[in-house]
Image (tube, rainbow, N blue to C red; front, side, top):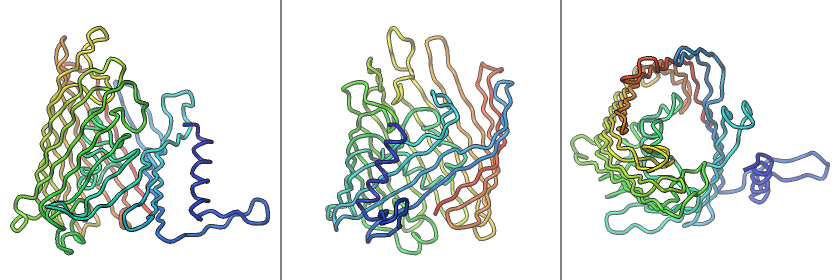
Length: 370
């Protein structure tokens, strides 16, 4: 979407909602905050030194930026627009800052029923079931994308419709205040959806639709309330005209407490949402894949300092042989304001059977939310 059009579109929405109001004198505007409207922002800024296959670089960069506009219409309906801001590193405007939409949806909240608590639907450019859940446990998206997104298996948003809800009511207020208030169902939470399949940054290139789901259970809520077990999957086709298979199954275990977060994931599947994980351009057969990931965060000094570590292993089985990528990440974070942090991290990536292909990144990054 052209940047000028998108900027004008957002300004029009703000004027319609009363956030921006033109004044009598040309060039003057007045900012207002109508009822039931929320605006927040999130930025990932970084300085890094990197060595990638004997090529070196060091740079200051904008890794990502989000502007969220949320409006409650009535007791059942609300809407959200989120812009995704990043630096164009490969396109025609290389080096320019790009603005595109990540979310634009209508949210419809429905009454509780059966075991479902606070259930709702999103329609439009919506959340996919998996990544938003994971990113509310592993809070270090500022370092980079998480395991399955970094290996191009899934996207965080897509065009479609999704149902989400908690199971068995909500966790007690102390847990939600001190540990995690997101997806804090007493028995767990669920998400199911039908999507185009190409992610929020791609046009639909075939007629296939993709089913994605997540089921999370909290099996020992009265004994180990921070323990959750999750299964998530996708079933559909990759987003190219030839429509190669894309399907996966993944199991994820997470433990959260005031001082410690631990996660472990095992993944197996074929292909990916982009349609790029194929054997060749003749058969377009999907490549079998498998992998696992571990993450830990140790919180110190009343959670003002965190030490993090992560290890990923991802294998693709081509007809010519296997390609395995192994990534290790370690870092220390300083939390200076709620939801804001400095992070110093080291990210090392190598490939089995490809000794000349590697990446080493030393980075200082900052996440701002306000």
